[in-house]
Image (cartoon, rainbow, N blue to C red; front, side, top):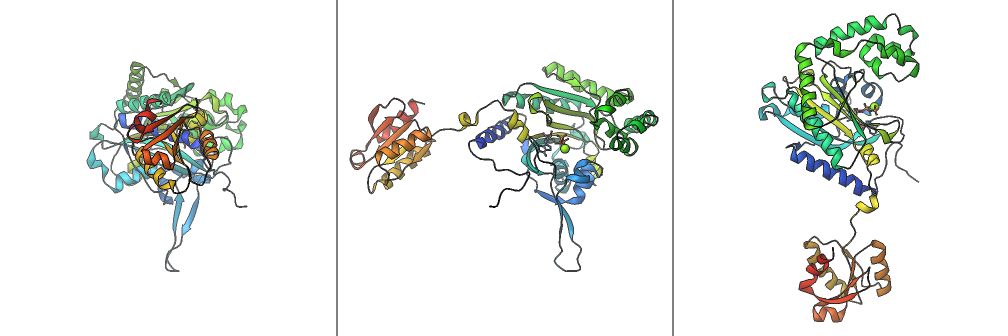
Amino acid sequence: MIKAVRGTRDLLPPDTALWNFVDETARSVFRAYNFQEIRTPVFEDTQLFARGVGEETDIVSKEMFTWEDRGRAQSEQGQLITLRPENTAGVVRAYIEHNLQTRGLNKLYYIGPQFRRERPQKGRYRQFYQIGAEIIGPPTSGSESPARDAEILELLATLLDRLGITGWTLQLNSIGCADDRARYNEALRKALDPVKDRMDPDCQRRAVTNPLRVFDCKVPADQPIIEKLPRISEFLDEPCRRHFEQVKDILRSVGVEFQENHRLVRGLDYYTRTAFEFTHGALGAQNAILGGGRYDGLSEELGGPKAPGIGFAMGEDRLVLALNKSAEEMQPKPNVYIAPLGPGMDRAAARLARELRQQDIIVELGDEGFRMKKSLETAGKLGARFALIVGEDEVKADSFALKNLATGEQVSVPRVELVQRIRRNE
Ligand code: ATP
Ligand code: MG
């Protein structure tokens, strides 16, 4: 038997109702904040991720699905292609390619699959889904404003609330600008130098290549060392400090709670200022439901114009795990099961079904080959509210037997009154 590939999974009903609920809620929240949808390709030139995510990140160094797309001529060198592991790089590429700067401030969102070669476990898959958004534009569009950072964070709080997800924590930090980071890296190196030999080999390597990433070390024995390292907040220059203060001020004024977490860092130069993560207690080891931050230098890194931006990506798989809702209850049930009774009745039943469905009534349509008993049993199993019986006499009278499956009550309803009658009992 051929099975789904390791790390991928089928999303089946009734669970897909939960996914649709998340998608629809996200779309309606994005609409309220005036974001528009962007859809970029599922695969891109490998270079885009090498530069846009960073060679030394886990994603690029070990998690990407990459292959060579052979050129048509034998001699032609193949191009390296990668299944997207995240969507920000693709959005910024599209921004540059289509000159979206001419539109001023772009507020874009996406929903779609991403791919990473990771060890599959609960909340961690090789094909997973992200819902994300970016605010990006030329400096004159206000894309650098702390008001935009706060707007994104408040949007996220609203989305999680609307989904009914409680018990989340917003962790917030500022990682400063390029100059701040250079001075901070220097200080970290100095502080790590005398102690790094006592650390786990992986953390030691980070201490040398990219000291910021030491904060991501999970080895318990190294934590006391990490806790004593200097903090980025001591190195922010005045504009960056003010930017961070303004973000926090707005969050307080709109009532979004946050925790400052000085260990929340992103190790690449084009990540600037605000960095954040939302975590959720019920998710165990995979407790991050979303991450994001500012990337004021990313467009230039990819050869584009200066285009400050801020964005986030949330893991939809983890969101669905955190939902407090039963898939069974989310799945809408048929309002009515139409039971054609006897030969030739499929045609009349199909006409009726068409009329009702055009009024947005959920209709399941039976089969003239079914006996009454079987039709009623099927209707019951589906959880339909009514059965509508379509026999020869009913068609002649243009009036149909409507049976309430909960009470057993049955009445004859003229065709023109059916919609109203079915709705009345909703
Ligand atoms: P983690 O530390 O859990 O590996 P990450 O830092 O790699 O997360 P990001 O690249 O910031 O994650 O992606 C944003 C969100 O996408 C994460 O917070 C998480 O909810 C989700 N996510 C990332 N990788 C996976 C995966 N393999 N399976 C399911 N969801 C994922
Ligand atoms: Mg990861």
